[in-house]
Length: 196
Image (cartoon, rainbow, N blue to C red; front, top):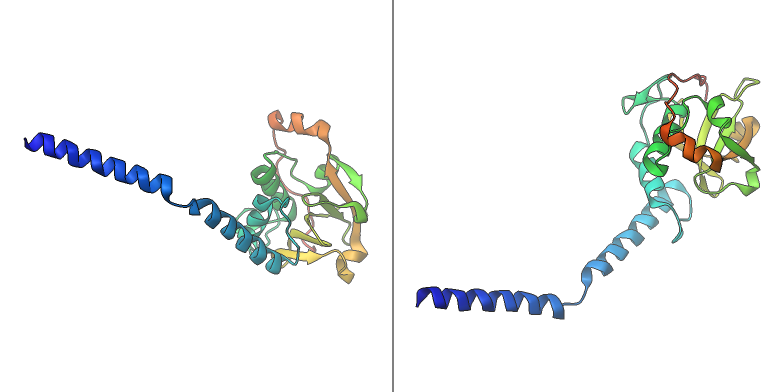
């Protein structure tokens, strides 16, 4: 008799939980949408970029997580990183692409893009106190880009007098490299200058 009563009680518990699941409004999706909206608003304010429904949130979360990381020439970790290592890490984590290690080598993998045609995730290249490309960053939109500068990982404006003066070209990853990158070994060591 006890087993029968226990089985009936268990059955009512299961039925009650199923009924609650069916009748309860789907607040999980609403909360997720609300949290995404709050995250977009917060990141928009911090980065100075208007995030849209099509924005790559993984890109903006990655940049946010790295802001303030110290600059270290040749560095590749949270203890210190240089511009090309930051770009390489971002492309690996956000776009699942293993790009080359130096800013000049990365430039060889892109199709040049004018400043006015840059899109979120494109690359921006600079010739800072050099005739050769010496600095790279990732375009976020609204004229702003993320990069590992001498101040550490930061967000800057292409309209800044300093960056405007040294801006070389924008670049978009060539489709032909996307297949090759998956299997290609990464080159080691950065050659970016410590003046960016």
